[in-house]
Image (tube, rainbow, N blue to C red):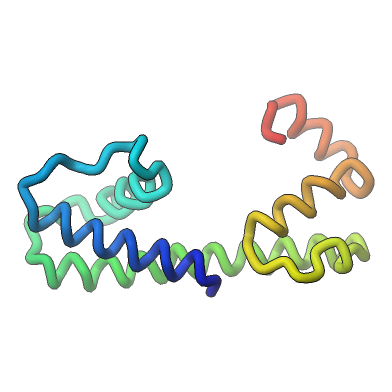
Length: 126
């Protein structure tokens, strides 16, 4: 688990508790797009969360956060495998964040997967 994932999880847990226990304005998307998206997914998974006590919300969120972190770790593992399959491990020596691995794969896609690169570029996903 990366430090950013841990920090994000801790921040979002704190925000969930603050939102659940305060009468202040809700968090806006422009305040933190990632946080808002995570909270939306959390609320979709647990639609009755607003009816729960803060301690229950925290417990549910920690459980939810673990699945998010596990997904990130699997994604990074898949990116490492792609680089390994392309014999390009050296392209990401010292990479520690998911964004580093994504950047490396995107940079090497034209060389190793030109058709996939062309499709993504055509859809404006690169």
